[in-house]
Image 1: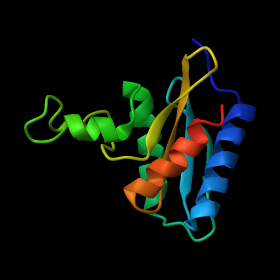
Image 2 (image 1 turned 180 degrees about the horizontal axis):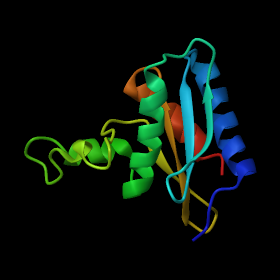
Image 3 (image 1 turned 90 degrees about the vertical axis):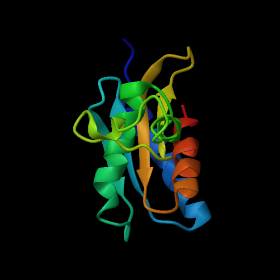
Image 4 (image 1 turned 120 degrees about the vertical axis):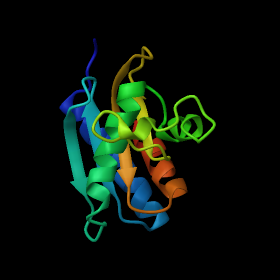
Length: 133
């Protein structure tokens, strides 16, 4: 199994932070490795304290299921096949802002989770980070 390096995790966070600055928002940004362990985290000055846990859970959720957290949200609606999944694994996040991170060979090497603004902004910032690799 390939794993994200510290240098790659730093680049992911740098790109995500730059996007957050560009759109004028303050974010908590977490990167986990292939085993869903925290690899890199930043809390931008003034970012919400409550978003620290959410960012980390978004990253872990994206890695546990190797899909965007927003996709899990679509599947976990009351009529969906994954209804109530957010109560598993010590708590998952099922709204946008978490994405798997892939290497150049297409292997998932980790995930990013972003929280601190609207879910649209969270997803945009996560996408900027994930695409930095």
